[in-house]
Image 1 (cartoon, one colour):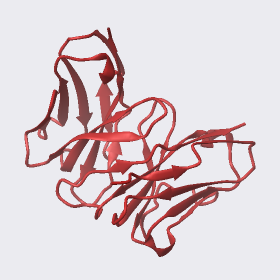
Image 2 (image 1 turned 90 degrees about the vertical axis):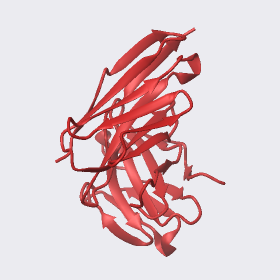
Image 3 (image 1 turned 180 degrees about the vertical axis):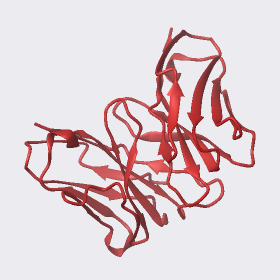
Image 4 (image 1 turned 45 degrees about the vertical axis):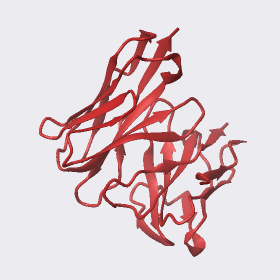
Length: 116
Length: 112
């Protein structure tokens, strides 16, 4: 079974530039999550999709971050314009339904973003 | 608001030792708790998931316990190996449809 795919693995940009990350979840998984992990901290949820609808985006900085999941499969997270404090690893995760008993989260390898 | 802490932040042990990692959470109204492993530069891999009605889960050399009333979970690793070196994170999901809240992790080094 293929895992959660993310690209690119690394990205270096200058502040005020824009950047986009792509994620393809495990086939059949209805729920997709984007997390931000700053060095030395646990992941923080940015946005959760259930199929192609947004369930939770309460911690997404909407003035600069946007995300979409067209057709309920793969997803793109964009930052425009980037700030120095956006330097982090951006992790995509998926789960089968988003809340079933015993349901686990599956993560991709992440995109490491450095903003200079 | 749920807060999750993990102690210690880092741990270094010689190979073969049994060890315990701790996870504490402030709100005991949880749906489940999950332990993850993260290798440098990689994503998270799920190790064990404990539902709120369970007291423990075991997988190989790993055993996770849950005490909801005291807001604590422990991950026990038996006969540690250098390959166990990684960061271990716990994450808690609340009862009311909330998403997982992660702890900061414990960085484990097992020395040969």
